[in-house]
Amino acid sequence: MIKVAVTGACGKMGGLIIENVQKSAELKLVCAIDVTNIGKDIGEVMKTGKLGVPVSDANDIENVLKISKPDVLIDFTIAQAAVKNVTACARNKVNLVVGTTGFTKDMRSLMDKEISENSISAVISPNFSIGVNVFWGLLAEAAKRLGDDYDIEIIEAHHNQKKDAPSGTAVKAAKVISDTLGGKELVYGRYGLAPRHKEIGIHAVRGGDIVGDHTVLFAGDGERIEIKHQAHSRQAFAKGAVRAAVWICAAKPGIYEMADVLEIK
Ligand SMILES: NC(=O)c1ccc[n+]([C@@H]2O[C@H](COP(=O)([O-])OP(=O)(O)OC[C@H]3O[C@@H](n4cnc5c(N)ncnc54)[C@H](O)[C@@H]3O)[C@@H](O)[C@H]2O)c1
Image 1 (cartoon, helix red, strand yellow):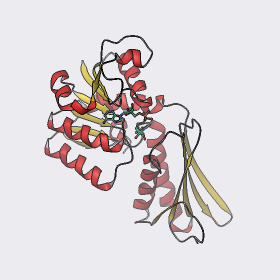
Image 2 (cartoon, protein in one colour):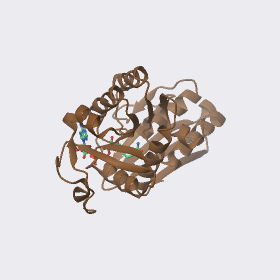
Image 3 (tube, protein in one colour):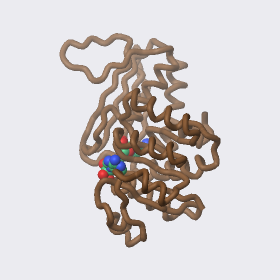
Image 4 (tube, protein in one colour):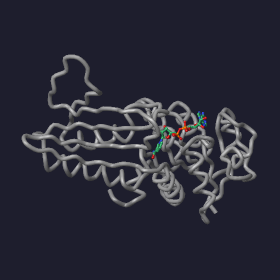
């Protein structure tokens, strides 16, 4: 049985991940960590019935990990919190699945350093859905075939609670395309006098309960291609994160992407 800890346990993703862990025959929830609802049973917080796992305080994460001894921790929180949680896991030899987005380059370097220096295994991905991981591959293929002659715009839409913009998925889409084309300037939105050059434009829409839409437009003379992914439910991400948690416990120390888990690299 793989022992699982979840940070951001009381959040939208955390709750769904715990539901999936409960359904799995291979996984057992050993601790639920958050900064709210401390001491309450996580099942009661989720309104799914008592689970016998009280919410532990994220501020005390080092001790919580030492007592509950998870094999893997799944983190869907906010960037600053995730850096702290990753560091605590690395120093306590707990493997990681990190779904949190919005990291700066420095934050990501710090996490990578802690993971490598402490020889643990981690899957870090801004999107755990199978569809989006295939979508990134399609973007690389389209960019390779269309080359520099097509104008590229990325438009993403998410619910009105999302904190970071643009989405981690859109940032990764831009990176995949830019890497394929040998490096492109990124322009975030446009306002006022803003003539288009050979950049990739990135635009973030926020509203209602949109789970996550990403459209990449390749526009040329007299035609355009749109490659689009739409998530209908957060279950697409939660299922992928739980699959990654099982996979990472059997992996060699290192930092992996969801494409490694899905074997589509
Ligand atoms: N990788 C993916 O597939 C994927 C999919 C969906 C969302 N996300 C990302 O996951 C993150 C969470 O999304 P959400 O919609 O569940 O947000 P949410 O706001 O519903 O939940 C975040 C939870 O984290 C908790 N939290 C804050 N600080 C904490 C800390 N220090 N330690 C532990 N918990 C803490 C909050 O109290 C909250 O319960 C965001 O960064 C989002 O962009 C990633």
